[in-house]
Amino acid sequence: MNYIKGVETCESISPRSYSTALIFNPEDYGIFYLRSECFKRLAVRNRDEKLCEKVRERKSLFYDGSAVSKEACLREVKKQKESNFAERVQVETIHKIQALNITQPRPGDFDVRVTTIGSLWATYKFSLKLYDLDKNFIGTLYDIETHMGSSGGTLFYTVYQKDIKRLVGNDYSEGQKYLLQVSLKLIRDDAGQLERSNLPPSVLESSLEQFIVT
Image (cartoon, rainbow, N blue to C red; front, side, top):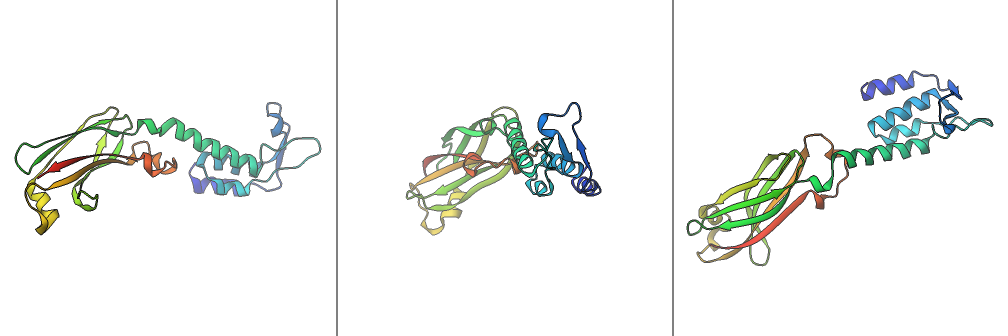
């Protein structure tokens, strides 16, 4: 059942209809409004706290109905979100840069080899950026989205002298020293869980730096 259809189904239930003390119900499920129970299930399934506003507890002198209440709904939505995060988007599975190796096959050109570690099937952004010795940003040498699978691998790119000249402009001269930064950032995962995982930006991206001399 999709979200809109689910809301329509719950709203079609009379707000006065309720159920009491079914044999196999937990103790705190002794009495509840059917409409509220419907919205609670929908809220948990869609991890949507806003739907908990429609959940009302049925009060009774003889039965405990606290399992179907706004407070219980909010707790279960939070628990469901945490469960999804733990099961599908674990920080330690995100691909990260493990090592950086830069060699110079020709004067002014640089072969950049990056070794990664991780196991999260996802799309990542691989970037090479150039900075001066004071870490002032000069420009981006390379920026591409790439898919990574269940094991680490190697990313490779050749930085040509002409690309550095293009970024530096008239200030370029041979023998200058620059800081080359490589970074790898998680953009989206194949399971579609990243958007609702609430991961801090700091864990989505890894980077390493190395000085180069043109």
